[in-house]
Length: 457
Image 1 (cartoon, rainbow, N blue to C red):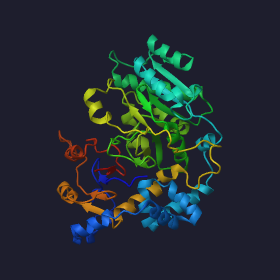
Image 2 (cartoon, rainbow, N blue to C red):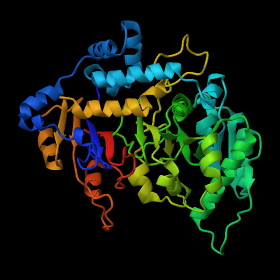
Image 3 (cartoon, rainbow, N blue to C red):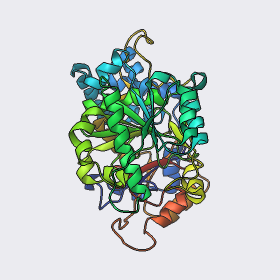
Image 4 (cartoon, rainbow, N blue to C red):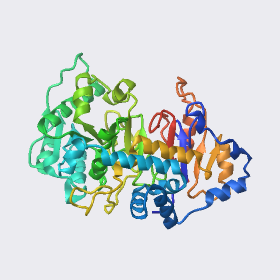
């Protein structure tokens, strides 16, 4: 794997690290860094270990040579240096490995381990051309590993005959049509129609596949990575092994070209991403179904009453692409600004997860382990406290440090104080977001309410 491009970790939606007043006090900028000369810091930060040295160092910290090497190789490439440098990070990995070995698998993990396939619910309405492209991306030519026609369930809002024909041609059967909306009031706005169709679709998906412990939810204007299902299947045990995990998503809101590269890395956020996500049956039946909202279901999913402090897990590099330019809440401007340049994996050779029987022996470190809260937090602490990390207080310092300095493999932490509760017409975070070309809404991809990570270079 190539060395990590400039990694920026940020507090609040964008930028490079965490606001001192919002993060744990112990993780503030190390005082000793203030006395370092620019040349000394640049020299330390630009030192690049060889891939072999990084693996060897990481392996020595997490186990014996053979087992440790396998664990180090399974570690996301952009994290390996930290694994080799930080004993607390390595200890967190070892503890997580021991717990994974001793814990009993839950219904989703057992279902997938037995060779089960989760249903994929495709929500559609009146865009036959987009739906044809979406189903083709998912099913044609074996593009998405593990995708089968019998697992795809299309739920059509309305009775557009062209949409129904697309489904029959692609699946050999008709879609499940949602023909009656029980909405109050003369005017049925788009948010209410969408929320009602989501509830109809999720209820029917679980009813049509009573043995399925989870459902994968997508819409009719997506393109998919070859390992779209692999990613969700491989990370699914987190939903049962880590109580701090809410749902899984294949989508990174800030996953734009140049902002991401590590296809093995998982991220955590308190902001529900949606756009290709895995919903456990238990969550649906015990928490969501009976309280489903009448409108803006996605905002409702992001409320504290819903996630209860749990986080959504998503990949650094997207596993799907939002191709639709027209929709209830989509137009050319927003698509071009936030969706057009999303970088999603197109490498068919990437083996994120393998189905049972495809590997000679189970992996010592399963892919989901790197998205567990304990391991993820330990990695962040290692990054924040590493002597190779450059801590800055403003964008001007970032520009100055960038001059004449090799930033390859560097971690930059940009500390900032932003009033996230401001009601100003122009949000305080927008200037920083515009500088880094990320979402101006600070809560998107934010971890612990204030921390953002992305590549910058």
